[in-house]
Amino acid sequence: MGKIVCPKCEKDDQIQKVTSIVTSGVTTTNYRVDNAYGSGSGTSTSQTQLARRLNLPLLPKPKAGVEYGITTMLAIFGFVGACFFVFMFLNGEISFIGLIIYGAVEIGLISLAVNSSKKVQKRNAEVEAEQNKISAKWIELYYCYRDDCVFDPRTNKHTSPEGVNRLL
Ligand SMILES: [Zn+2]
Image (cartoon, rainbow, N blue to C red; front, side, top):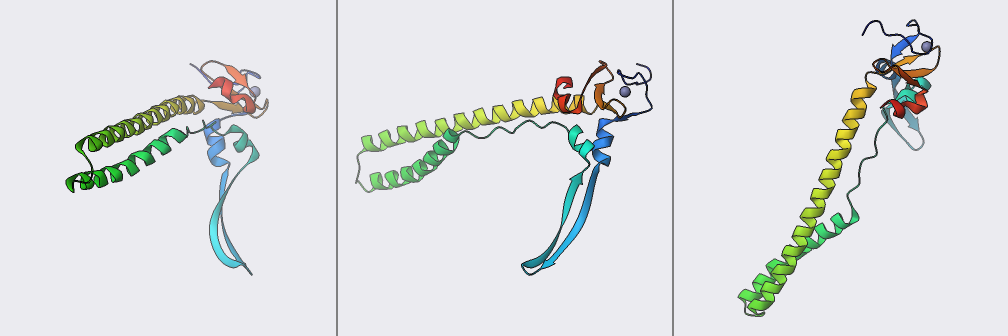
């Protein structure tokens, strides 16, 4: 691969790496507030409009399923219950069969919770792998100020900053 040029205007005088536009387009300001409601200080970050248009697209993070929370809670409550049942059994207040039935239910609940936790972890890993692929392609992209286009110098495909997903 030789010199990198914009696939639209075929020149290199107006191009810049997308990553450097985005990082140099971020400004951080420290602020202090003092008014009737109180006082405080902090940092605010702002981006130039171009940097915002060229930002790395982020995939939505998968959420843990509702069933995961519910089964986990049931498993925890069940464990506490199991201790109680063992205590009752030792005191002779419930039969051995009662204890076995309770134990079986509890094992079922725990395995449900473990399974859905595994599913969530798997989905997280998949999204992370996909995001890494997107990031790896995104850091190779260039932007041409003349044509307002983003392009991949390896494929010469170009698009508007808004359509950057097509290159990733
Ligand atoms: Zn151009």
